[in-house]
Length: 202
Image 1 (cartoon, rainbow, N blue to C red):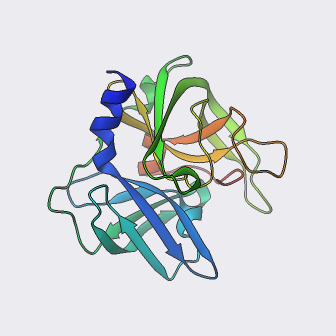
Image 2: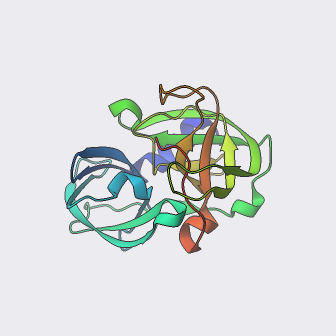
């Protein structure tokens, strides 16, 4: 598939997330099953007492945290309301990802909804030091498709249109918090079943 075809296939499965707690956080999520369950990054909804998701067709809904794994920066949300047409993403096998494979990232970076970027897998099984007291995050997919604040929780997709990872972090040696060519995603298998903690957040 072309990048445009991947976008057309995945965009209906991508949601915007707004989480209100001591502050307001925004991020991205991806619908992963017919019940409307949404995978996202835990740090997007951490400490929130109000979570709103907006589906690709504009449908807005409150959502609650159905499961969380803060040690791997992954959470699952359940919306109270679903759109008329729900389009779950096709989930791939992370073990089939190889260095040099083409990938597409879709997310709401810098408030620009459904932004799409493409690149390649730059490395596998990466480990990143967590912030503060957080332990290291291990087993990450490294990629160079551009991601920025707001991209967290979005899908990393192969050219078969399969979600193979959940975007959680970027690397930047400065305090700018912007993309310099190195992003990280939790493999979809880990995101669904267990993992480690989180590196610098986006």
